[in-house]
Length: 90
Image 1 (cartoon, rainbow, N blue to C red):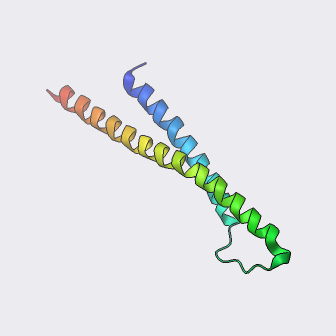
Image 2 (image 1 turned 90 degrees about the vertical axis):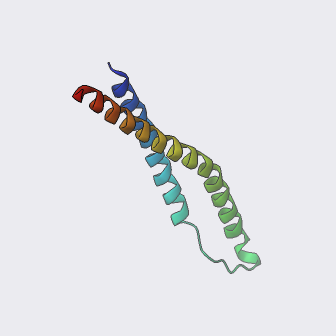
């Protein structure tokens, strides 16, 4: 297999993992409340929100790195495809 095919496979896997993480983060933040008015009896809700935000903050660096890697890799693939296309014309 050519290097282009391998790069496309790697890009597809990176992008699939990124999409799964984005969906997971989205399902976590759907449960998040914008504003909480808590009394002493609702303190468990505050703990749930803190745990939820901890999970989201744990996922965010992975989302950023995978997004950057996916974007960079697709640019490299496009550049390589253009380069190969220009060399075939000559």
